[in-house]
Length: 404
Ligand SMILES: Nc1ncnc2c1ncn2[C@@H]1O[C@H](COP(=O)(O)OP(=O)(O)OP(=O)(O)O)[C@@H](O)[C@H]1O
Ligand SMILES: [Mg+2]
Image 1 (tube, helix red, strand yellow):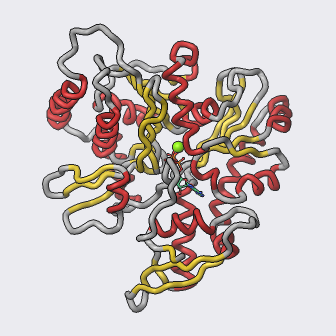
Image 2 (cartoon, helix red, strand yellow):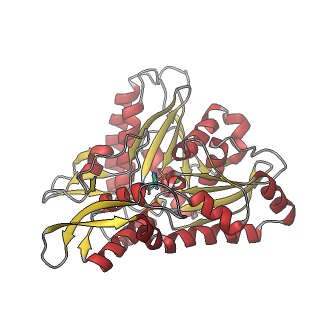
Image 3 (tube, protein in one colour):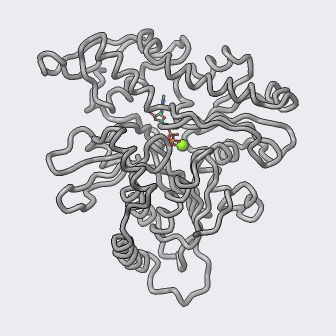
């Protein structure tokens, strides 16, 4: 089968998603610092909030007189995918974190799966962007709109008051970044927003014994970040968030094909190549595939045959960066807990855990037993959802902070 941007995605429930926006990372950084500097004018914010009030009243109905508590909601706001968990229902939405907007009017054209299909093929005047970068909010306005859109999709008329919202954030997120995520939640209509660190949520979602005295290690490999944490007695003992994940693997494939074949691959094609051919350790899977891209010299479409071996080599640098993060945390782990991990092993979560042979490779390089969690791409959402279901019991794992 030829891999190109037109190849349909695999039929997984949480479709692997990863593509780049039309903005470069510098632009996004600039945007982020603008957000950090609080550059949005009060006026803009006020208009936004009144519009929001309308939206929120629309989805909660004119029911503010009721004292009933609505179903609370958990959100895994990921760089690649956003998953929404509703209390008592489980995961009800899993969509790529992509928004397509009309540049002239500012109107949203598509969000999620449909917007992702537009990445790299939007006509003039429409841009499809990923508002989160490296696991943090890079474009506040768009993140807020995306979150609001997703929450609207899942709302049920049963909701009588604004929901309590628990959002998952990368560990080690700065106070400013945390505030941006919370603000997006409040603007999207939550009555109270809590945040939980991604590795903690991943560990809970993977069914790890986070409250036990024995230490356990979780490695969550997402689109933008790899989060490694040692957890014991309900808390994170040591952790690290490295800005390397599925996106970096895709970029490595694009760079390899460009250098070796003078062929330009689309981001979605690169992701498909990674999923079908990519590996971190020699594995028995598919050994080669035809891949279509654009010839850099002639500008015309061209097909090349890529092998699993060359893709494994191309992925080596970011894979090593993931392993180095695991090693660094093992180095920093107190000896008692390191002994526990030797027994309990390392649990891999996140969509990146599905890279063929990654578990074997980490096992090979660290000497520790390594396991892939069931449904790794859903662990964070399930763990954050657990916090919603058992709010009082799990409250200590939430990052407490007043609204303002
Ligand atoms: N079978 C697979 N093999 C390799 N990579 C995969 C596979 N399936 C999904 N992925 C990758 O997993 C990544 C998405 O994982 P996930 O949904 O956990 O990320 P995220 O939570 O949105 O990101 P982050 O946690 O960094 O904010 C994408 O880069 C995707 O390409
Ligand atoms: Mg994630």
